[in-house]
Image: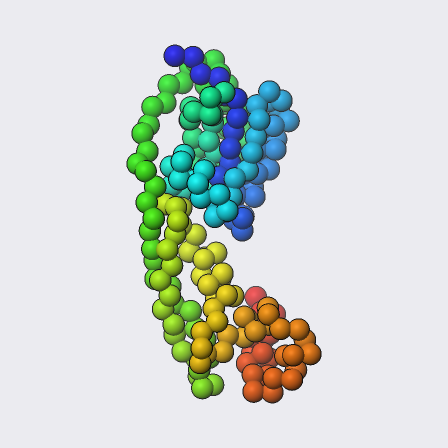
Length: 188
């Protein structure tokens, strides 16, 4: 059976450094193979495509035929020359790949974030449900912390993101917490 690559999709996460590097590789590929279309698909923004193609790892390059059927995939980071070699092998019919991937499953993980309650740091467990098989624990925990708004707890990151500067200075009860959050942010 003859396969020719018509499109290459990069599946990655919006905040993934390795995915950005693979985006650079994909750009170089698009300049070298002008007849191959390229596209970046962000896993957390397009779960439908991620689940349709059964993407399991971040980042993943998916090589598609004209009919949008998978010919091959590369998971993880790969240098431009490695990708070019794979494209040439496939387009010359020197490579036959037939791997069947299991359907993606919704999965969940429990994360612990720390908020203030009564001027003490308190651990809060949050169960997060991933809509795809691709997991991003570091990105997820940061997003959970930034968005956490739980009655009875102070989340200085949430407050700083959702209040203007005037409102923050008027909140004398949380001013020490804001100072600590600023100290933590500036030391990163």
